[in-house]
Length: 297
Image 1: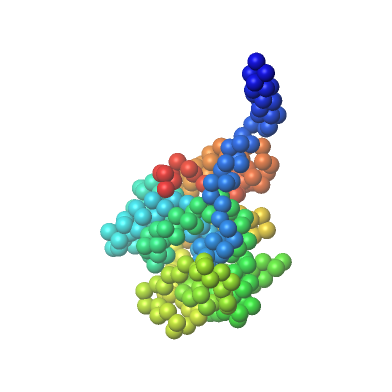
Image 2: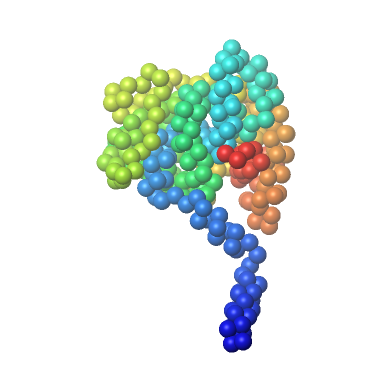
């Protein structure tokens, strides 16, 4: 009887504790423990893209959370190489992929890289979903290391500027985006984690070791580009999207559809979080992942 009394008392205490804990606390703790990357792992993962221009970088971060769509888009792009300009945009509109994935169709070397290095794409997406601010902070840390090593500076292809200790990389021309090609094991200086060497990818034509930092061919901004213009909110530690931007470059995109989709995702994921969390003006605001499109990836 004494043992039963002790067990009953323990059960009552457990129930009282569970009632006292706010709803969802257990699930939040579980989610945080499921996919937590160590700092050396984050450095390893973001190294090959940390020096990409902000507008392209944000598209990659968002698209990496939909790895299966990246694979589908890469295969589709290879089969439809003949499509250009308006024809490409119209064909993409019929596809169910996330806007960020559609935007990368205009950057075949990037899309190919994400398709070929699918293990990297999966990790990048997992890290961005689980630790978005940590990912953004890591990118800034690596940019500072590259700059201190003398390997990140303004060129005819890009503009590098510092605002409140944040390094921003922009295309030198608003009409062309150049994809940088660099050796991550060299460009950041001495790599501090020998057990976690950085991921690397070299586009076709780039010879590893020939140059610390170079550029692949420029891509004209237009056609498939501009579905969800990404903006790095470095101080907030997240990515903002603006579906209204680039309308003068590409008028063939049904932006209202993407605005409504993103607003619906914000409504589900950010109830009661204030003006910025709700996205501010229509078509603008904090990016929200759509788990239904991840398809178990």
